Length: 400
Image 1 (cartoon, one colour):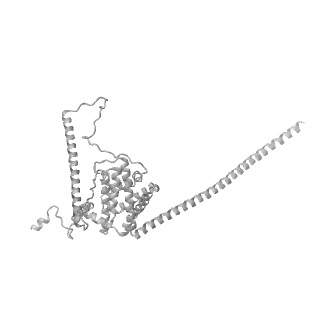
Image 2 (tube, rainbow, N blue to C red):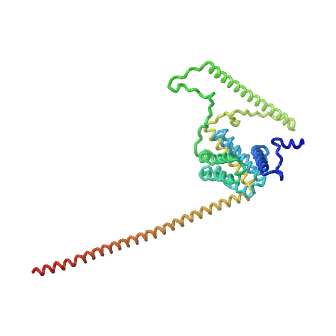
Image 3 (tube, rainbow, N blue to C red):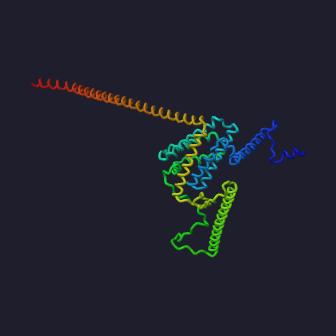
């Protein structure tokens, strides 16, 4: 009895049995489907999902880091986090489908082909930025998502598919790519100002001076200022402690090296003070447009070098051959299209010449018909006027 009661508790659905009614089967299948979907959604950003992605697509995380760094410099941290999260979820989901045999190797290669095409094209443009064809690269990035969407439909929610599409639209936009290759100058990042820190206008909406702050507002302002001063003091203290810790570690390393060295103690090396310029910009530290432009060029160079090295060492010969064949097929299509266009033009020209000849012939025929009509009219008129002349002559003779 205890087992029976426990099996009937809410949420303790048993697997589908052969004796279950059709309605029960549907209910259990839908519950299993929802549970599976929830689990896969969580796995997409978990350590398990990331490990799986590293096995199927080893370079994915390095590429995502480069993308996040570039988006951070161009459009801010929040946008970069969103872009990386969406790309990570899509990549992990693809890897999961491949591992579960829902995607064949052939299908996975079809998904990877446009990615590899973008890969090598981006590397070539990084090595020679002045040759970058933004329109071509934009079209190539936009071609990645349609194939991915075809395979992920039914495995991913429509909302997530829409997010993936928006992400690829953003990365493939001409605006983004023109800033990556420094064709368009960078502008100031948009700043979100909270009501508490928003500057108050000097004059009111009607042109009159604003009212003076009340005692409560002045008190709140003083509290905010005191809080800001305390935070800055804590930050300075934290930096000081970190510097002291680095000095202690450096001293320990030197002592250990002196004990191990047979030539005696080693002269102490001056510790490097890591000031604000030696560190990467932290959250809240804003860079100037010039600094951000330098950062974009640096990231572009590093990403190009890494992707070129990975292409030469890790990308298989089969994948390279797949990309080369796709380019050859594309060139053949272009030549065939160009030849067809030329043939159509020649045919149109021949048809035009034929039409001109026909038009000229029709015109001559019309002129001939017109001439025949005029001749017939003259002949008719002449025939009509001849009897009148005869009658007049006869009348004249009779009178005489």
